[in-house]
View 1 (cartoon, helix red, strand yellow):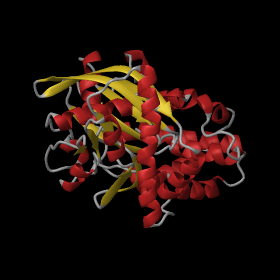
View 2: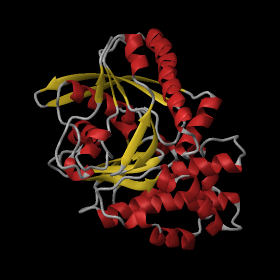
View 3: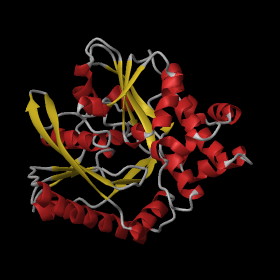
View 4: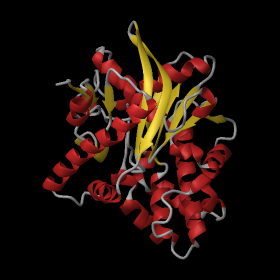
Length: 364
């Protein structure tokens, strides 16, 4: 799994067993790989829609080969033996219901490991009228609800984009949608202000030194149409990437850099809290944070401030590392594809029916 934050590739090793019409998944191990600087630059340009067709095609294959370069030594060193691989790839365009595109050719992994590789998960949901996101909700439901059987629970991923899966006491998914930005704006700004020295605000320490502009945050929450859209909905860099940051910086004007970072963090925290308060049928009793943003202590503190009556924990406390949730979700979706278990949740994505997600590249 590599997400919209472009911070590298997560490899998550899981054991999955079929149990009737469901599956049980256990986390075993994880590893990560970084992008070479030239490849990361190309990915950034691809997500900003600055590459031509030939360049995108070449990048698609180069990324596929990189997965092999990463996973081959990882599997050998960690003694990983696997039956299949779920590959999300890199999203470079997401504008549902018109189109979504994830790159990273799966055939290289299949050729190397001689096993099926399941990829291109989002398009089947789009084909049935859905948003193609969020599609990790089934994983959230099957893995985490059992820990809180009598409570309304939300699994909240803080990747580049923020998304939630809200479940009731009966394990029914009530809502699942992207709330807006999580790490994306924070990473973009810290990288810019540090002139490339920092790729993220570690533990939110830089933001914690500043004072957010409540006025600018409030104005942005009112003016940005995405925040008030009713779910099902999903977003990406197209809504909350470089262009959004450039416009937001104009609004922030002469604020000190640490105040700008605090304001961006507050916008993220407020957009998350208001998504629960205004777009969900009920507030969660417990929110489980995962993704890189779960390590941002300041962001977590601000979310807790705005959701003062909700218990907020991280997936680490339930034996799932915060960086392993997304990879684990696509491992589960891959297994569901092989076992023909429908894996989208139509009431959350907007699809007309439940379908199996992913395309299988057979071993050859």
